[in-house]
Amino acid sequence: MSNSSSITQFLLLAFTDTRELQLLHFWLFLGIYLAALLGNGLIITTIAWDRHLHTPMYFFLLNLSVLDLGCVSTTLPKSMENALWYTRAISYAGCATQLFLFVFLASAEYCLLTIMSYDRYVAICKPLHYGTLLGSRACVHMAAAAWATGFLHALLHTTNTFSLPLCKGNVLDQFFYEIPQILKLSCSGAYLKEVWVIMVSILVGSGCFVFIVLSYVQIFRAVLRIPSEQGRHKAFSICLPHLAVVSLFVSTSVFAYLKPPYISSPSLDLVIAILYSGVPPAVNPLIYSMRNQELKNAMWTLTTGCFYEAMNCIAVIV
Image 1 (cartoon, rainbow, N blue to C red):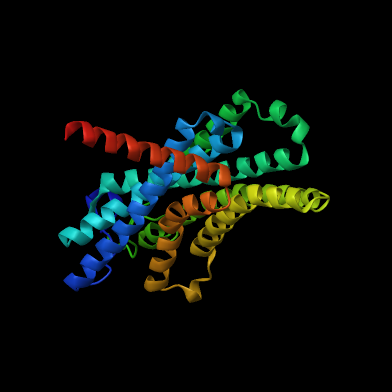
Image 2: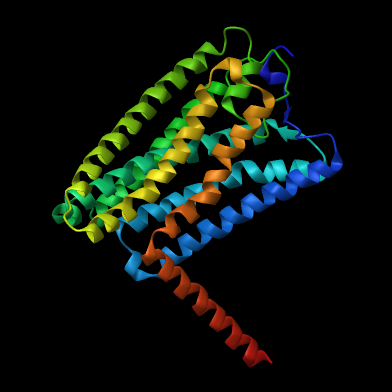
């Protein structure tokens, strides 16, 4: 296959040739997907419904949940469809769409996590200036900047990746269209063009990571100066969920893309891809709701209210 112009479809990785294990793969991914839909959907609905949660912190959390829903909806449904119908094919246009959306949403999420670290920094270190530095207009502008950065990043990678000539077939060793896997199919030396784009992305990502680390250094210094134990506990309860989400997102992504070649294998690449593309969107709502009493109370009020409304409707019908 001399170049990518003759390719009309790609073949994604098949987890197994055994039909029973294919169905197990389908049910596993379906469980992860439903958990992500339920958790993030509940957070989005609760924040939109409860006026007490219309603050910068929850505004950014709502955006994060939307991005998580988009990320998990970009990769898992196609893999579930292939497992259910016992196929591996994905169209050329489907690959382009999947690559663009995944890079767009994942990049925007990383930018948003960086902005959320600034929100935590201002809330802990400059509480008197919180309303000024993080007004409604400023929050909208920062969220829009995160989405726009993700869009431009995805556009750059998608156009550059699909301009590479492919000489090594159309079989991908992954369950979704991933940049490192397509580079393996490119002609000798042609992938260097995309490598330079990846290096620029790494530099930008490293800058965001340094910003997050410096923000938390200042935050922990400020928290340790709080005299009361209750005040320190409240400050940590605000910061630790975000720090946990950042750690999960960064550690899995860095290991997936920067691990040494000698420890790479199809099975390991598959597990890591599931960890950074499927697990965080399903786990993030749990992380944020575990230590946030205000959010848990709002969720409880919303769910119990919906339950009573449903019971009243049933009673009227009966």
